[in-house]
Image 1: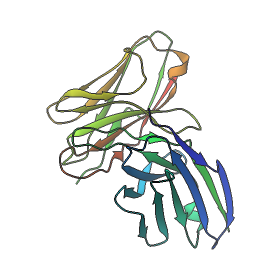
Image 2 (image 1 turned 45 degrees about the vertical axis):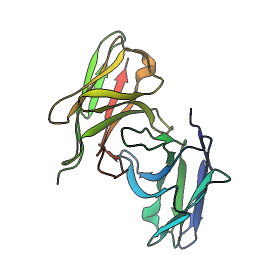
Image 3 (image 1 turned 60 degrees about the horizontal axis):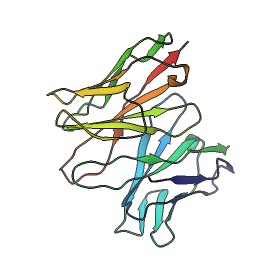
Image 4 (image 1 turned 120 degrees about the horizontal axis):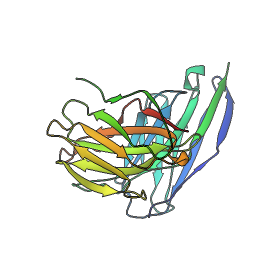
Length: 114
Length: 114
């Protein structure tokens, strides 16, 4: 089955700096890659996603890039703020019309220091 | 539009007991997926329900079972509880067949098995 590796496990940055989290996946059939942010004691929140027919997607300070050949995708957060501090999870999925499951990485604890 | 809700919020059970967790999907969504999130880990897929039938299952034993009702809400049942079943149980709702890929999570049920 699908396996998703995520690095680093912890990341500490100064406010205003950029943060990059990287994930690799094993199944070349995967075609949907969402990123979730989970604050302590809260539900995972979808912050951005990308489909395999797109190489890059941006939403304000957040961007995701996908390299299908290398089977890796990355989350980029620019101009980080203290409220960006949370655990971030990447996931991969083989989406078809009838069902799909998300396979998650182990998460990255991002700390943004004021 | 209402979001995904789960009940109860917290639950304490003893080894060998049975538990039922409930999930109401987001308005307009017809599919519910269940995930188990152990402390410090990413969510792991248990199974998915669509059209009141199990529609995909992860590596969980048969003592994990579920139901989906005509209003798309769902239950997760776990029999013969083990200490290792202690975790946060998350449900996620989505819309199969609508061409949308996103899964939105509920707040979770924290299960403690003693």
